[in-house]
Length: 234
Length: 234
Image 1 (cartoon, each protein chain N blue to C red):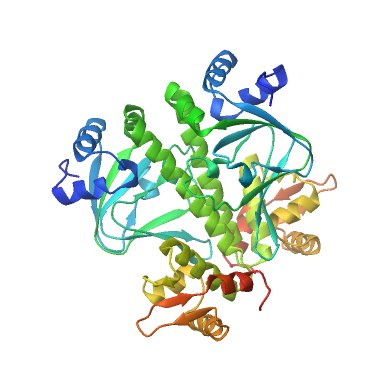
Image 2 (image 1 turned 180 degrees about the vertical axis):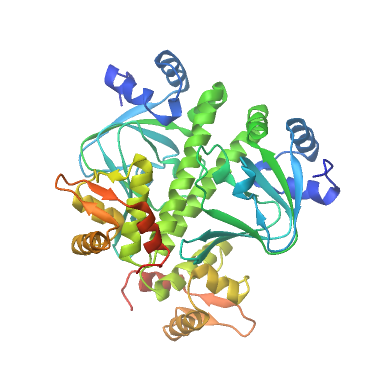
């Protein structure tokens, strides 16, 4: 737990959604004022362990983390992947019970900045921009979780793949979508097996809803994918 | 759109999570200062319609609303039920795109107070308590959505019913749980048919994990339900 931020770490903070439109000088002044600490984690460790009785938020300075839901029977559902500059642990912030169900596991060695609850509240009161960024961020988390619920309730793998491709395509604002997660990670994320995933891609290609290019990119025909989702063309 | 709040309406605001520990005088002063409006809706209307280009939040003063997700193929997934004093429409607040997927439909005639985005930001800056309440509320929504994701990913109806009963039981802090939603609403909420729901209850009763009492209440044996969820006793 060192209390100094180097240039790379400050850069990660600069790109953090909490500090949109805030200068590095202001970040340093504001964050140093409110108090925080850094923590290093080895690969495959649990971050923000419940046993630490943690309350606050964390920002990933370097490394990669998977957010998981673990079920009583041992099943694991990966919910999202955290990259440097991202905020996480919001569900611990301001929560009155310890009944937490998300588990943060490091995929690499990780360097994490932790701001506890009191400090975060002080930070939000000290700056209108940071407050608005924080509300915005929480709001994006709400929207992300709603989109996950929509996704998980789709009735079959074909619909899941269609929905996923349309989403990727709208994020890229282009009909040419490049799947930039490793295939295994992607299947795990979609909650479907690798074989099923490729079968569905092939079915969609045969229906001319997508075209798989030699470079691994996929060209998308959004109207056809929407038709398939609507059940017009199953 | 009248700009006066009567006693009942003020009472609904008083019980709104945004105004926890805030006096009626302060609520009146703060809310009136920032600007808001009221809107009445008939039964079965859509509240906060996208076409209104709405940005902000809403508080239900009277009536009941269902929050729905509609799928491209017409399927409907009810996500939650809004009772008086509850806040809703957070996913419209601060959002930069119009790609909204929640539909709020009135179950009765409804009276809604609407605070637009600028006014809400002003309100949050004007009071530390309201700010903390708002963050707390957003946080609870995040936790609610995570719990929904956990629920929707359970693999079968028996696990869904177990999970639901354990949740009801922990909310009530008692082993005697009373299912206080109408049975049809309950099944719709759980996303399983009425027949399947009763079949699962009977199976759980036979396994001595629950006991159905004559008054409609259900006594729960949490350890047995957890064992069933763990797959120890399927």
